[in-house]
Length: 320
Image (cartoon, rainbow, N blue to C red):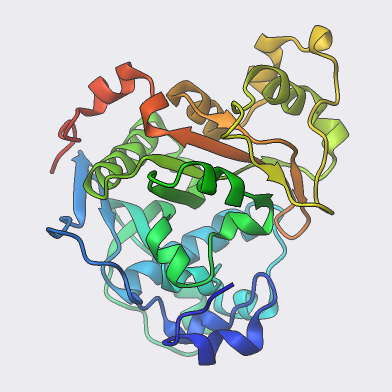
């Protein structure tokens, strides 16, 4: 994998998965490809909620603190020592990704204040709370650095090679604060992604989505449903990497009750399904995050027309 010269000195000694070494970069934007016109960071708004791209290291750190709260404090993930000390979820990919945020202007943020108090740092001026986030990595940026994060779990090279004219976007590290897991928040996140996809002329979205738990047998019904009823077509079906591959066809198709299986799926995966996404071959158990992951593949051309109409061909529905 290739590493950008600008960050090699930071990353090389800490190449283990999940390293916190990149914290030294403090969320810096690194070597992004120019576009014909700048994308306005503010992408949409509903009431007090705004969806925007992070433009400062402070905003990126706020997203990292939200991820820590959702993944580690409320979830089953096990933080590395540096993450636990900083109370932020971060890795080397944060320096090269764009970070999509949902902010609540009616709720001042206090994320990170406990850690500041422990270090004897005065409380900061209140900012809008970051209540939702997605991490976005475009193919051209990934190729200039160290590839897609998804490659640690799935062999996606064949589907990229099979579609040389397509532009890929990786979606990852999605989370929403529990009190904000509502239709408005999710709609704003997808509105922001849609605006980003249109601006950067993205053809395909992909990434890993998670189910809670590390026992595939306990997840036999939803995994089997995705295998039998939502598998990606040939040419789009990437396989989990050797050594991490977990079969998804744990039940025969005749024993899969689609209605019950859909109810058992996490809301994020159900959302991907409604949009038109399909899934890769095999699941992957992620012991650090306490999840079982599946690969989502969503060509833009496969998105249900009603969703394109809903958000607008120009992403104008919730324009600020």
